[in-house]
Length: 225
Image (cartoon, rainbow, N blue to C red; front, side, top):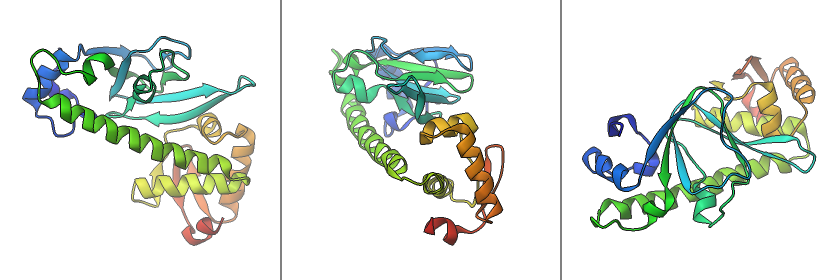
């Protein structure tokens, strides 16, 4: 079992390293590495584990009725996936989880996480509290994504996303986790349309960008969009 010092996640918030070492054993936790581009979970796969990103980034995506991929979320070290589905009793994954970079993943058996073990580990209660908090945060993030997609104007959709990312990173200069294809998948738009609109927003003096690096030039004008 890997050292708890290598595991940092809100799922384990408030649990001491010594307790975490013991808990990982109780939870039947296992770690695995995935190269960039590999699918960690495919849509339709049987799921019973909660995934914790230890290193790297992963994308959670879903194909629409026309077979077009839409990225639902980009997850970084400390983030979790599949907990929403296993908590809801869903046995088959409705989404695909792909390594956006080389990634290390910790898998936790959900059945072990919600039941007190024979050792009556007191930290299980804290784990469940943390999981409920994560589920609430996922709902908030999903609400923001719905707000993006419900905006008719592509410019408004892009502006809302960039403003949110700027707020998260507390800077007018920030990086997004997507290339143009990924951003198009995330915002439910065509790649060429995204590229054209970004160019127009730059020409209008709203933003500057280079690849996945962005800078907000006129925040007030961007907010009015």
